[in-house]
Length: 69
Image (cartoon, rainbow, N blue to C red; front, side):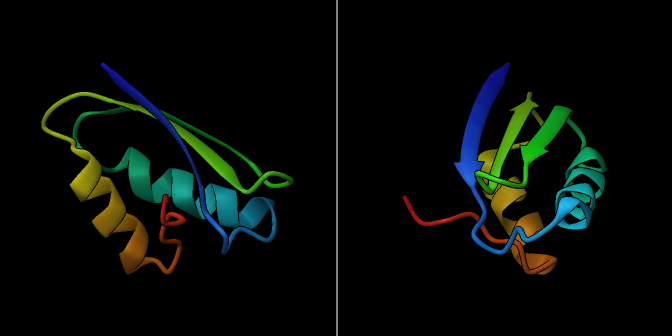
C-alpha cells in the first residue's frame, strides 16, 4: 500500500475536504482519505489499480489540484 500526504492550496473549508474525500474514495484501489483544513493537507492510502497519476487527474477535474512539489 502507498501512503501519500500532499497540500491542496484550494482547500478553504471542511466542505472542500469532504468533496475531495468523496471524489477520491470513488477511485478503485483507494483505501483511505483524510484531510486537514488548517494545513490544507490531504492524506491518502491506495493500492493498484489506483495510481498517483489517476489521483492527480481526479483532483484536477474537481478544481483541487495538489500543490506542485
